[in-house]
Length: 475
Image (tube, rainbow, N blue to C red):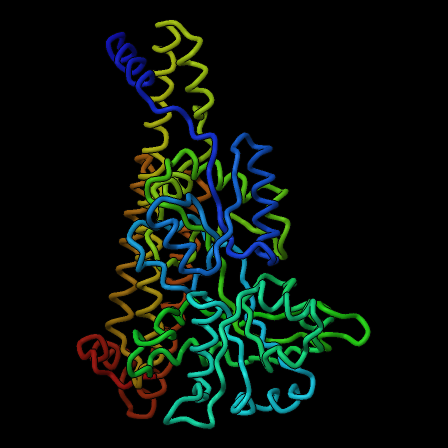
């Protein structure tokens, strides 16, 4: 044990110094997303991690900077194909952003009835290489509206304006030079949308087909081509811009407005230390950051699927359960304790590792039983919805549930299944499934008794036949 403690102390002395400064980008600085990033930077500073906000012009530029290690963290749209950048890892999904479609007031009525009304008009898709441009292009393509070309002379005229360009036109009051329609993927409420509405006379238009757009990827002939190929539609969801968000009198929007949503995602370079990722996640889910949006952020969002692999630091964050030994504790032991302190720290580390390992094994065992119960329930539903309700498969499922229950009780008695609450939750599901099977078997028995009366036979004989012949037509 003494040798282990000495070895641990030597290893601790070789650990790299803790990260004390990181860089973060949220794209252009004049957006609401950048305001959220500012809040995160301030909170990180209060938590002892200095962060510097870096401006980029597009999602592609942000991801490229993270990919090559020039930027540590980035806030990007989770619908953008992050997996194309091998050096980028997902940290956590965040809140949902809304795709705003803003049109000049004289077009609002026509565009509100269908996006075909954009034909022949200038449409700003957002900066080149941005998630806005990729998503807007995919939406227009889904609606059957193509950009103007030699073969599509009635198409819309595509523009790719930076945020600064749009703001400059608004500040000059040059409304004629503004595009007829603007797409903007943004945190709600959006500073850009607010400026276009109040200073440019633009109106919001509903995009109520998010679910159809998401499912439409199944019918896409070549989903990997063009700008639309930069968007993973399965990451799209319906979202609502609340009434009165941008104006009170008159109300803009006048009622809750449905549009296409994409969840914002925090990503990082694969080489960022896990310790830094953990501190950033602690800050993201702290009250001063998590409550900036509505509903507030919760660590449960980390279970949502991501296009990129999770950073090891995120995996460690998910696994941990408020460990007693933190990075600060390790630093104190390394700097202040003697060999005796190192020995004590080593023993604490081993105990904590064993505790976490035992808990992980129990959680895996509990999860495996939950999956087995879910599989039985799925098969019960399949039998119940089939053309005929067969007796023998139901009896086999009932037998399987009894064996599963017995096995689970044995594992619990051996200390391999967690606490009493976990066992209670599992037994509740098993008993519910068993009761469901019992109801179905009683239903078959009632049918057999009626049939026995009609045929002048005994119910016992028909019951034996039903068990011997799984193809029974009872039900």
